[in-house]
Length: 70
Image (cartoon, rainbow, N blue to C red; front, side):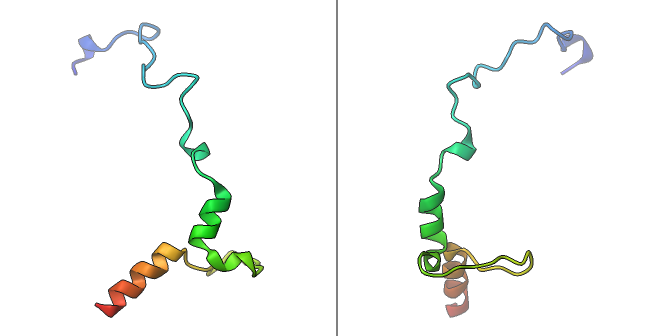
């Protein structure tokens, strides 16, 4: 794109891919379902995060198990 092809400020049109009805990705998941899927042990255990090493998500644990079986 050359400098002459850049529209002056205020002449740019808004993107058509964004509209008031567009769903934000952060609202497209269920936190309870995510917790039950990734941390199944939380249904009967309390975990107090100390901001250091925490539990691995279930899918990470499964991938590591598969990798270690080699």
